[in-house]
Image 1 (cartoon, rainbow, N blue to C red):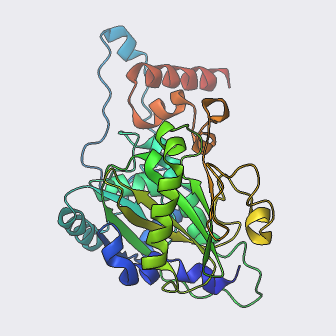
Image 2: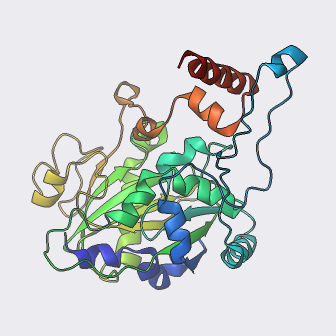
Length: 336
């Protein structure tokens, strides 16, 4: 995988070419001070929060008296930086897209951080919603710090111009998303995107799904993308229409889902026992899906989550846990 291939998969590189095939989106240049804020390892303080979480007052006056709030003059008060001009541009873009958006950077979306949002979703309505997800995401940090980590060429890393991508929010059904692998401009593999779940309709309609994606590829994608080796994601709606979702580099930086990269690169074992349905013509891609509930797996994003108690403390959602935490800290100070 070459650095040039990674650059070609940036959203702003392919969106103008395939605008009519995908979800309406707005691209905004990311100011350097915003990037610095997102990469800051300090305490998470979300800029622009309109309704800060509040804790209900304890019913007992005595319980309230037990909490000793520090009046130390050396105590540092954390304040979030403000980006007024950028915030206005973002809000205007969000409003133009219907009021709710799916955010991402040049390549990645903060899928690993959905758990921290109040709605446990990537649906954002304000800049503070976006900041909360971005500052909590390893995927976003990787975009900033290691975009070319799996590239094999020794050329200097290109100078990056980062961008905030806002996509109109659409309620997509996970069981209708598919990842497609293209090598030398030939569609060689299609995988169920949400491979951790079993979807009965995919198993029953796999030939029809494969055929519709293959037709979409030949008509709209083949020989039109900037590289001959790449990965693209699609969504097949209830009417059978296929929509383009994203492009990714053909290499280890991209999740191979129900394939292995060894299979995809070498071409070996692609037509093995995993191929679903009846025997297809030789030129057809290999289609793989989770074919029974026995093979259902936990979500790969679970490993990024924090314990629920920690989340409750960080958001102030559970006042009693916050009080217990403060008592614990006071007792530790007394012991010291």
